[in-house]
Image 1 (cartoon, rainbow, N blue to C red):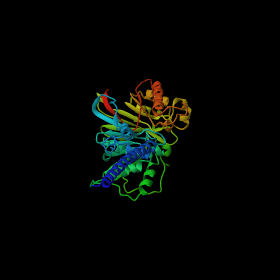
Image 2 (cartoon, rainbow, N blue to C red; image 1 turned 30 degrees about the vertical axis):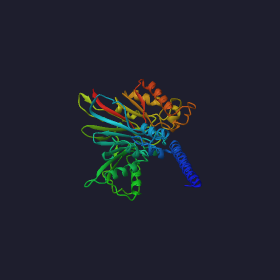
Image 3 (spheres, rainbow, N blue to C red; image 1 turned 60 degrees about the horizontal axis):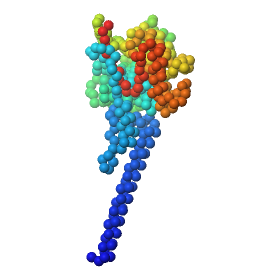
Image 4 (tube, rainbow, N blue to C red; image 1 turned 120 degrees about the vertical axis):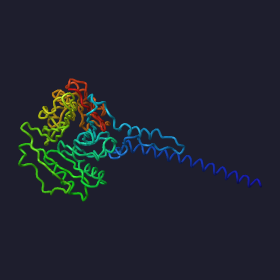
Length: 414
């Protein structure tokens, strides 16, 4: 081989090595750009994007060409997903023979935040799933909780007709219908209880959608004497899924017995809010020696005295805390409660445990809380509410709910 041919061959090999090196450099730069872009999207995404990443298990994190995980991507996706897993608190009670379990589907008021969905509480009891309020996004929250089976849904209790408590209702019925789509024979009935107007809302939503539903709905409205003959009517005809709709008039003490069987009773009473609002009491019956758990679930309220007798000696009181004590006057003006008001009512009920929820969106984790100055993130501000409620309650047994938190409530000796 001539000297010229050797030089040309060496030049050609060097060119290949340089091209290969340039390719590797560009590949690393591209990978870095993609990862940084994903991190930026996750960190700045609206709720719909972030929620789609917040599953029960941490998402699998992509590996680089050499199989190494990106630490930045793992922090952006995996840690946040793990934090939002369904976490169970210790049981309230002793005997595990009879137990309710509460799962908070949403703990924000008015609008969702990046860490809190709007209002909803799921109650599991044996083979039944009950929902108390159903804000937008509630069905996605149920999908994140493996212990919640939508096929077991048989009752939905609505406190009032503000959007953050009901805008997920039609979607929830569609979700239940799809889950039960393979069943043959008699369709399952989902009972819906709520204030006047809930029947109209459900009818309008279902009649507007040309969809076949694989569940039946029984929509019961709870009336007070002033609405007994003049309650809200609608021109819409009943949807073909409807069965057994009833108007339920309260008794002389303004209390409803909403549902009752051999082992459990659900009562309700009106609450003071800007619109007609209802609170609920779940009380299991266990016998002369063992008493079943009693759980009080309130809607938005600035005065809950009407439910005090039914809720006495509650194992758990779930109470809104939309405002701090410094804004108690404003809370009452808008039909809401401060943390101190929640604590005082827990003391009146002689409740064993108080769980605060329905936190204002002013508690954004990247913002400030108006009455307390700048620099307080969501956790610090909410913990302040817990301390205010503890002082009014006279007990340290107060916690702040967070989304997907699970609370078992067991029966106990009398």
